[in-house]
Image (cartoon, rainbow, N blue to C red; front, side):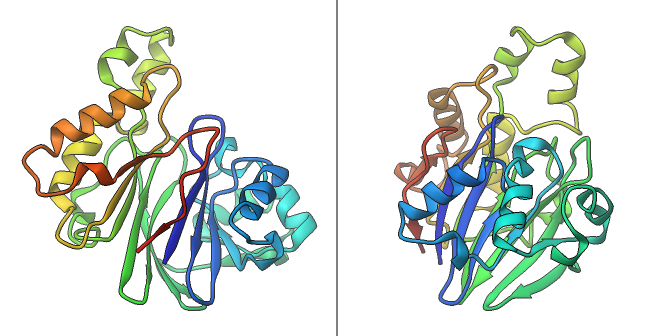
Length: 253
């Protein structure tokens, strides 16, 4: 399985997953042109995509969706809870309604309910005994998911903010409370503590995602997660920053 974060942050999110027979996007929060360019950089034509998984309906996760579906007729895979809102922006014939677990060709997907101010989901993506956990845009991670997300090969995990920077920063009070609440976003420290509970011998890479431009820095996210993992056996050289304006390398596991 190959993974590439095309963009990650408050201005747009999109991730590519590639197996032997399948090419998927998680979210389409950047423009169709940006997605085409990013795919071309790794030798993939947008017409080669088999579909899109949508985590939730905020604009930084669906910005390019209308144009992608309109121009390229891609199928969008969502649970029933997202169908109504999705039909407001794309034709219903391009929506595939899925259960909590489903297959797209040779890829198996398990949905994880996340905690945001809209209905939202994370994903466990598995192919040929390789595995990815994708969790962003959530105020916390329910402990009932610790077992099923444990010891996966790759984690794409939100490290949105540093609590001190957030509370001392420019956001109005009500927005600070939203971000730090159970319906908001994960902090660096929370993400690091979650990772200490779930990473294992099979874990090869951790990608830090959805990093705030106002309430965090890339260096701070990296250093605080490393501090939380200091007593683990994970090689912190394999922590990758997912940037807003620059895609990660194509990671293979």
